[in-house]
Image 1 (tube, chains in turn yellow, orange):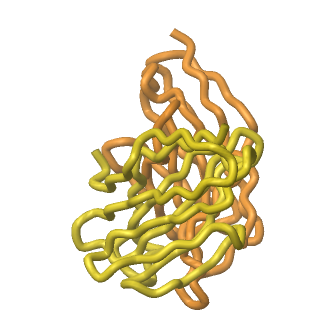
Image 2 (image 1 turned 120 degrees about the vertical axis):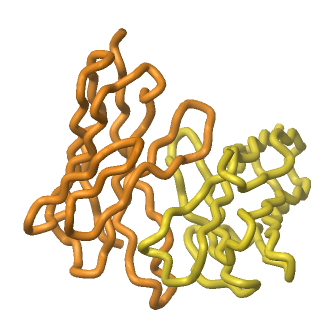
Length: 115
Length: 113
């Protein structure tokens, strides 16, 4: 158990809909990272938050947004869903900014299926 | 992002040592070398990391070349549970938000019983 909790584990929704994925980081971890893993793209970095503020952005679509709340949990919002958004979405947390000398801990992921 | 190069796949016999290579010729002096693995249907899992010296932990050993342009992850006695995709990643300085983990395609390790 990594200590990172993601909910829900599975989500099936229709095209055009909006969903919210939730991540609770390990206790005390201030950084949260979101990744998307699809069959043809591998693990793609989406966005990072540190202590409530956006820290880095990757290949995140404009239809996607995220935030980190004062209790440090994070939510990834996906809207106007398309079939191609079907993927595993992982959240990771690590202890602090400047964390190149520490490990990141990943949740078990949310499997999103858009039909 | 600094690039790493790994073989697409490797096979090893159960209970034998496994050496997983990684090339990172553009590594900078402050980059840490991280290894993660992803078992089927699971999130990535931290294995080990290092800067210059060789490192050991309960899961594996990391051998880093003297010029730091390559490294090798060593699983001392592979089990079937070690079958996974192994990723070698350079983790950079936190300035400009660069400490994110950038995953390549990794090495798919198959363990033969």
